[in-house]
Image (tube, rainbow, N blue to C red; front, side, top):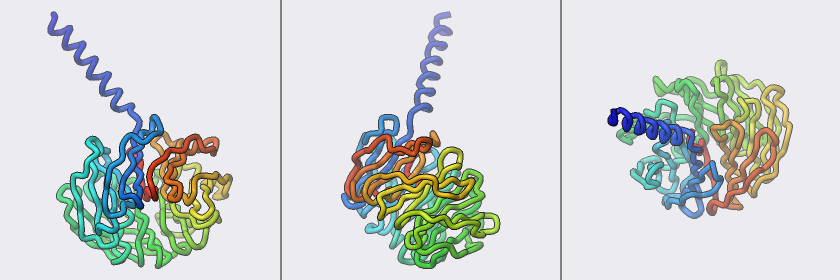
Length: 319
């Protein structure tokens, strides 16, 4: 009788703890390139909960599907670092990627993809052994990477080739490379994997690609030197950082028209959407801050002090 009572109580406590854990807000990981660190933001409180030193000028960020590991590209260390998300400790470093910049991983988490800016390749790294298992030639100066929701395709923005490559993840070969705007850098994909949005730094616009045919369906003008993009509100709005305008452009994805321009910090670069699909986080390089935007109202709701040279290139919020 008593055993059953205590078992029930223990089960209730365990269930409550599990529910609390599952309900806990995710964290945002902001690479501060100029001070060799990563700021960890508690998105429930919108404040920095910890800062971890990471040498090698950290730039790109990717989060493992289980949210236990954070992959951070380190261009000056010629590779990337692995951060334990629970202990806030660097557990491994991978080298041999000379110009490591963009970094990504699919929802299955078996592989890590790293763009090599200098060698014009994408390195494919096994997430268990942390060994490079394949190097894929792409266009010149690959930067942004994004994996399709079904883990079938990897898309690469080739900045100096003014193109985007589509890589078959099963075969690890390039299937298509198509022209886009001038100097594409950051890119994002919708939840169905049907459209890619590419920020073109020098042509001051966004290319919208249909993934099935790899055809451009629109080019949307934004402001000065767009860097990266993210989607929010069930993919109905696209948010694009404009580096030289200290702003974020908002595009209606149904009409493909700009519907808003939001003032943020100085030289905004990385941008990502919170799992609530409403709040958008923007890393501001010159200010060393992160601006938080409400996607519905298109207003900045908070400014978080991070570190010098906040870049956060990639999907830097744990989902």
